[in-house]
Image 1 (cartoon, protein in one colour):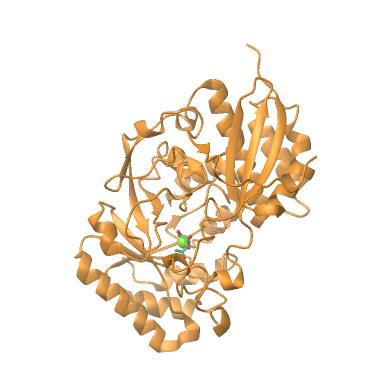
Image 2 (image 1 turned 30 degrees about the vertical axis):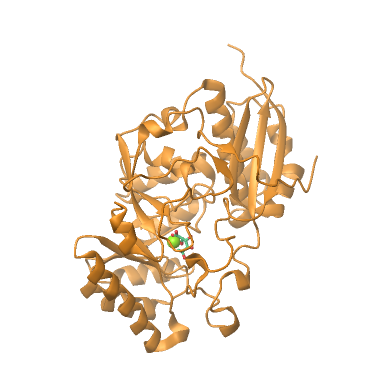
Length: 394
Ligand SMILES: C[C@H](O)[C@H](O)[C@@H](O)[C@@H](O)C(=O)O
Ligand SMILES: [Mg+2]
């Protein structure tokens, strides 16, 4: 059996939605007074784009083999990522066999260790890894979920992230995660507004629908503890990413202080097996939320997930569209997935990485049949109408 080799690696940048889903137009819920670590500065309080949440843009990676198959991976890394792919990672990829995914991951990780380890470098490595798994699936004519050992369930169920959990319930989702809008800089008045919002949504959705707060790294242990206890009477299911990712000590303390019925979750801005080992061994959270496009890709998420399973932790990947669905389908400790509502008013289901991909599957009535994923690789294509820019070559 002859194994194809990698011939060409190309890295493009795309603006306007896509993998950098914060890169949206005006009057979108995802940029409407959401609390962040920058909220202490009034000028950066209303809009996350004002401080640069969408500064990177989407990175699109194409890896073409000796037989003409093209693997596609996307992530949040923009021009920085394109530079790293073209000027650094390509040297390991070109000439390698399409099956050498584990070795290529190790070479790219260790070769960038002196400047990488987390953040945009691991985002970029993740994007390359997604393209490698997509390419292997196209060579083998198998979906990624089959190559990962096969689905353990017939369909995926989703909770929705967005400003309207009440509408998410009507659309069949199992829960609704709201962005927290007020933080320590807004004092008790702001905390009261957070709870009023939660109470209002609880009144609309009834007692059984999950409601969660996403705090996007913006709080401190004291405020998060007060918020959790005030939210308990409205059945808040989990408080997400309350603290900055490196504050393992704060998370461990917060987890001891929140009501026993409430989960502490985090992980979307954590990376590699070592970062998640810290979260688990320091007992920081009940559920981890790695983003497969940011934590190291599928190759690393397999390691993270096995570690979590051994610790009895659930792994519910941060919203990363089809790239996490293939993974969640195959893991017993991933019983549900996240769907980010990318319609500006969170009032309808649209593909998460719109407009970047074609054939991107979306939940129907809050669910997605695994059979919808039965296409080679991740089963998505680049939208030819998206303007690709290749800033570097090699
Ligand atoms: C809704 C949150 O503020 C973020 O925009 C979201 O990307 C992320 O934190 C999530 O968990 O979906
Ligand atoms: Mg989050």
